[in-house]
Length: 111
Image 1: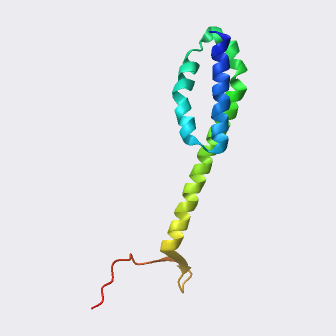
Image 2: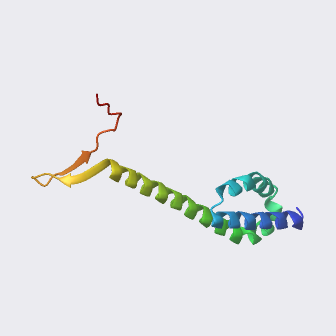
Image 3: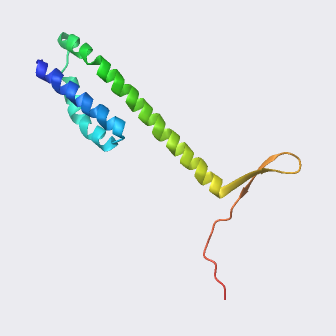
């Protein structure tokens, strides 16, 4: 494998990092086929070249994990907000937790 493949993968990892920091997941997805093709061109004889890129690979891996956790947190927060609009948590006279749900809204017709 030539040094140019290593350089191309390094530039691709930098582009992926920038996209992750911007939250541009479509750009990250668009880079995946080329990243996989370049990564598959490495073999045991080129392990030294791959080790040179390991820091960038680890950095991007950590960014991907952080992005996944961030999206998961946002989804959880949005679900809690939706649930808060639909139900009210309270306690009855015996101290037992209870939820009071809003009725589903339909069309009200008055004649």
